[in-house]
Image 1: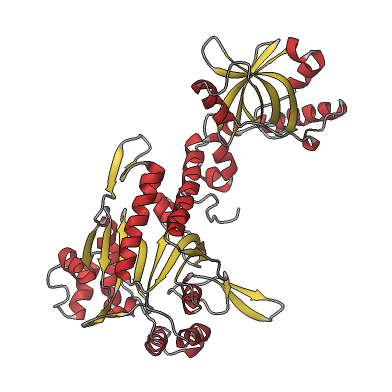
Image 2: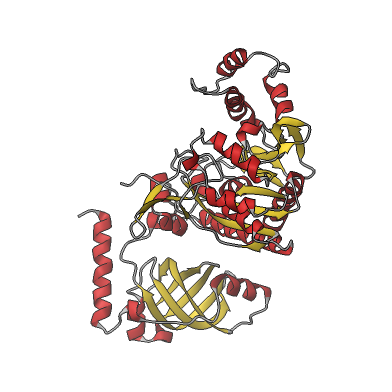
Length: 487
């Protein structure tokens, strides 16, 4: 029997001993009056006096047995506090029960606050209840969990063992809360739209396919939120947003997860300029409120700064064509398509044999330019072929009124002046679908024919925003349960 199995057997034996005494941890209830972190902080600040009575519940994360007394650390979501159990206070029987506790067990305690000789805020246990018995030992004896595979596959162990990981996901929650509060303050209405769709639209991506048994037809997990949110503009909602999951049946990488979180927002009577102001103001608000700074340092595992991102507005704006000329050659758009293809290959871009000329240029942008855009950059007026749901640029029939907001070497927010001409929209979607009418979302096009106001719309990748703000280099480190190949 290996060490882990031996420890499991010991814990099961303790559970059996407790049940033999009429104590079943999994049937007990307890109502705490305080939480661990705030109690410790309030006692330190003088807001809770010496001998104040508190009731706390949490998990045991440290245990020091001194014979007739024991010190333990009790932790909940808010932090930890030390507790102190004495045989002379609890009595022989209860103290013997206390000695059946292990690391990772959950307990509820009532007692009074005091400070030890070393100055540590502590609760003197006067009564307790065992609330759950952990039958497996905690990872790494609370010294940290280093195995990356285990960290992602069993995230609950990662959260138990690593304070920093727990802090990051609490910050992610705050980021989402601040996004919602910012948009609500601007009179945006939060809505929910279908995740299963008869026609996946709003982006060019490979969907996941499922089957609806009762209806006897295929459905698709959505690849974007866009088309249903625009239906709401038709229905009279002037400002709407949704934060929800999208699904794309494509590859995994440090920047891609098949299931990811997006914010999409649409504002009637706005345009891409409206969205530029919205994105810049929103990201800066979140950074100031959650992090207290617009200067974001990314560090390596040794703690050395490897990259600094400056979010101070105004953010740089440059057109797609200007940026290509700046980075790929001033004559990039003057040479022939064949010469562009040769240059793109020389620059290391991945070019398919069937790539159209605009796709060759986009491959160079994605390979050689986007990864270099560390500080915020609005790349505007992209080729019309890339974004069929945007309006053409006045005076330039080859580009559309769009931007890609690139930060930290990746796109985090595309946005554009929305196409609301149903005839033009049908033609462009049909062209994107290669003339296959069955791929068109006819319900969406019919909605446009009822009249959609001019509008600006944007999407913001929540996972990538969290990577940027929290200094993480892999998307798996900001998603609680990233997609993994089954064992």
